[in-house]
Length: 125
Image (cartoon, rainbow, N blue to C red):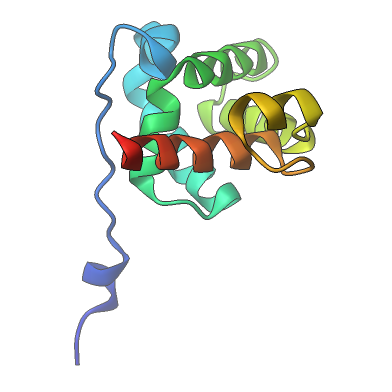
């Protein structure tokens, strides 16, 4: 019988862009916020950790961090702040202009669309 704990563990990739993106924008909160954001975004989007890392390291990750920072003004808890930012980004839908610019299907939740797109961009490089 194998242990389910060993199979449930997923290694969280580290940032490859600590001076910009999500990590750089979060500043002193980055080391706390990164694993929380990775876990909660994975749960919300169903996307793999590497796609989420690429998203968080991108300019979109910087904007996502801005949403987390805004949420921190209302909450002192990082888990709540990240959850609030995710809720906000999942409520926005990809529109026609974004569809044309990035090729993300119209109507998809913003967060899901940009995480998927980040994974695709990573695969193409």
